[in-house]
Image (cartoon, rainbow, N blue to C red):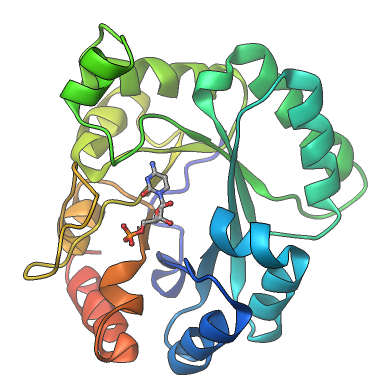
Length: 246
Ligand code: C5P
């Protein structure tokens, strides 16, 4: 697989999470951020409420789309769902790595079948351990005996073996993932909090500049931008911070 680090244009390295209940709210953010932010994440909340209208809204504003469905089902269901997602020409889509090797390999196959004879397919990403989980949740609630680090590295290995393009992990694991997998996996990190902003429900967090310095290709930022007094100013500040380290 090709190395991607350093090749993602700066303007695409910030992905804003459009976690909104309505298209009107999402559009307010898109209008405000136009010209500054070029990549958006449509997640479960907006997609469940408004489906492909939400994706098309982002495209109408010229934005790229990361469809964050975090699919986690049997291999056949996931691959058929992805075949249908491909028809809508999103730029990135994801599945849970906990779905396993067979599910992820079939998911990749669905994308390859779509891509045959076309110039482009969505990037396929595997979610490792959610950034809202800490060690206590992992071991006491979920019964996973590994440390977070070991679990993330293990799932990243499965993702790579299945032929996916990259992973979602917390910025606190990026250095380890880079050390083990070098430039062979795209790394996407939510759990980003500029200094002085609320942590919310995120547990394993870093600042934008630290996340990028330690090897994130893309950072996903929601509330620190969308709930800021001026979303545009908050996004500009994040670009300033990350441009100093790339
Ligand atoms: O508002 P905040 O910056 O915490 O938003 C982070 C976004 O990234 C949310 O949309 C959340 O669903 C998503 N995400 C995450 N942790 C993951 C994968 C996705 O927080 N492991």
